[in-house]
Image (tube, rainbow, N blue to C red; front, side):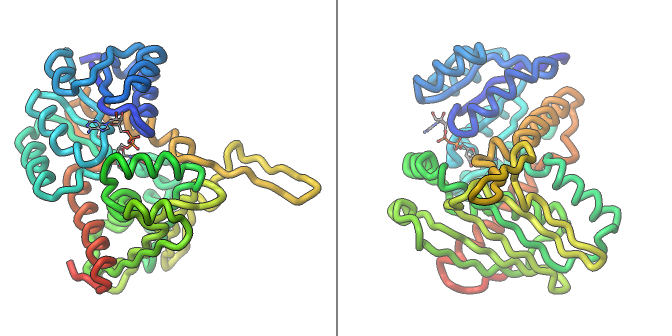
Amino acid sequence: MTKIKIASIGLGRLGMVHTQHLSELKEEVELLASFALDDAQLDYAKEHFGIKPYKDWKKMIDEEPLDAIVITSPTAFHPEMTTYALNAGLHVFCEKPLGINMDAVEEMVHAVKDHPNQIFQLGFMRRFDPSYQEAKRMLDAGELGEILYLRAYGIDPISGMESFVKFASDNDSGGVFLDMAIHDIDLVRWFTGQNPKKVWAVTNSIAEPKLEAIGEVDIGVANLEFERGMMATIVAGRSASHGNHVEFEIMGSKGWIRIGQEANPHYSTLFTQKGIVKPYMQSFPERFSQAFVAELKAFAEAVKVGSPSEIGANLEDGLESLKIAEVAKISAEKDEIVSL
Ligand SMILES: NC(=O)c1ccc[n+]([C@@H]2O[C@H](COP(=O)([O-])OP(=O)(O)OC[C@H]3O[C@@H](n4cnc5c(N)ncnc54)[C@H](O)[C@@H]3O)[C@@H](O)[C@H]2O)c1
């Protein structure tokens, strides 16, 4: 197989970004078709990326001569779409998280396990970001010593509020832990190689009434406790006034590493009469553009060589992170510490 024949499902906030990247990976993939419900999205993708548009994703899978599919639909549809595509013989790249309903996710788990020769990769793209990779390398080489504590912030920009409210009104986002904190839950597992023993989570809805109106929150904080008392605090939210605030810190016995403290596009600083201004990134596609391309390249390579990417998240990563996010949700709802 020289080029992977591929199609994309979903052309929304992230699906359009993935589809654009697929159209640019000309050496690795041949982008044939895309599915969306929205005519304007299909028209845009047809004009800019030359895809064949579909409004029926099963028909697209049945009719197109595909090797693989990239699924960026609303989360609740991931299990059904993944299962259908695997049964049709396709390799699957699916956005995080695996799903929302655990029964549906169980079926998806069986489908992935029933097709061991087909690649399944989950979209935890931060693993492919050079900064996180450097932290992983340092940890694995013992350069940071024993991990004592990890702290993560993943707060969407308030400038993205309208598109998030639409996303979470049209379909269930899963809530702040399943939809947002799960990125850092995955990274904590990836860095430490451990699952937590206890989770205590809280949320608030103070600043943005639009979120409360649709059952979402401003901030969710999950505290995770591991073996030997190692701890992690994950803060996720939707309304950072300055931009896309993504930060990760690992406190080790021999040193600390902090990633992404200043998400400064072009590394520029503006000196004005009012003071010094550093522009801040406003969106996740901007902050993680390298990682989004790298994860799709890794998926194409995995399909080509018939072996999963070592960096990419697999089924177990998806399942464990989802369980932890689900427990955080339950902890916040019940206002109690939950043991795993
Ligand atoms: N990795 C990341 O950082 C990241 C960032 C954003 C979103 N995501 C994930 O990507 C997925 C999509 O998120 P989004 O923000 O792009 O969503 P979106 O609402 O912007 O787009 C959804 C797309 O799916 C289609 N769609 C809508 N309803 C559908 C239905 N009932 N059946 C089939 N298709 C339907 C829409 O036409 C649209 O093209 C989610 O699972 C989300 O968690 C991941």
